[in-house]
Length: 114
Image (cartoon, rainbow, N blue to C red; front, side):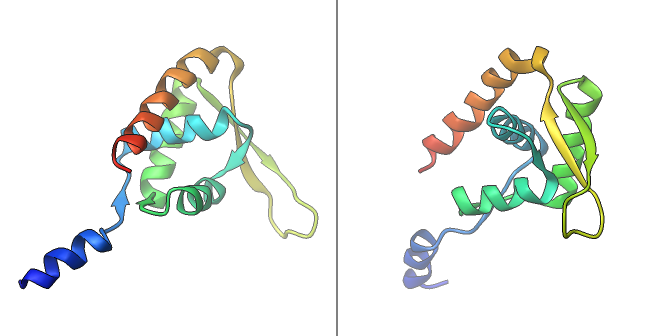
């Protein structure tokens, strides 16, 4: 290691991969705005919070957790011009309040590290 390596690290910090707990809060923050699909959640995160990454494995584990808890519902949607249906997710109405609390945890955590 050299001194320049330290400056380079802080000038271009490494990507941060979300754990499942963070992913749950992030997903709920997005679904409070409207429906989404798996790869759309990943793309939105990379577009809006370029420092953060979400792996497929963590994403789908978090989505399964939320479905099992009854927080979200998934359904298949066939899109015009697309060969196969896309699995869409939406927030269940009775989870609105809890989703807002968990989404705030996500929002507060990314604000803290900006």
